[in-house]
Length: 348
Picture 1 (cartoon, rainbow, N blue to C red):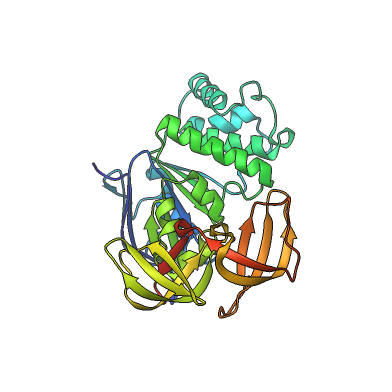
Picture 2: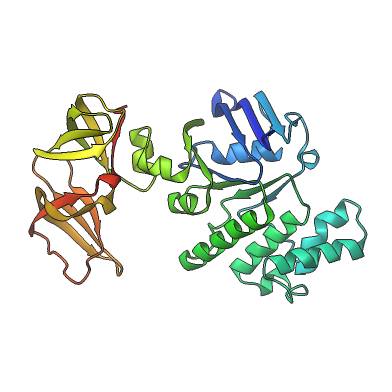
């Protein structure tokens, strides 16, 4: 099957600076792929290259098997939902939603009928005559989505679509976007710097760093099998600690962490010094390792602790869901570890 989007060694230079550096990937039809990374990593430039809002200085871009590298944005059959929503303030919801169809030459009746259908799909039936200023942030977001999907594009692009929304609304709207993508079988490229958001909505995540792909894979694979210390720390946070691999068998390895022996699944490990990524949720009260509570914070649904452990360069950051029995600063504790939250990562 021909991928909907294909990047072949695409680069974008601004003078001597490479915003995107020989990036290659494919995006299959009806999948949601997130471009994730810190500010300045190249993810937004990559999205704009797909949209035709930027033009590549090297390599080639294909959409649905057609070379669009040199085509204008209007010739690419893509739609974008911008961070600011970019709604026309003087137009009502129906006019905003049908604008693209009217601009392409479709008559008013057919354009408005299609717009009403898509507005109903995003839960805005009955809002057609309202102005953007009369809508909440979440409702404006839905109008922007309806305006994009009414054009039935080959690719739907989202540029940080939830950044203007509060935490609770962000969660609800991201679920709506994901549900709509799956319901309509849309091919979506989604940009965010929020790791939790990326994990929640994506079929696949492309993590970028310094204009290149740092790792590309399913959310669970990136979280459980990070390919570098950057990925381990960026996706979901991780404690990074020096360890020693002492014994191997076909499926498991034995490691020594601050004098304690732990067993985890890692067929790719080598005997000798290694770097261990420990997810905060993988730490519990147990009997493997002794430590002292250095910091404690109550966050309603869980406690966050920093635990100083002799032999480790930095305290371990732990998320413990037992809020009924908080441990005070200075308390001596013993720790256990869930092997599913432990991963050996390359030292580079």
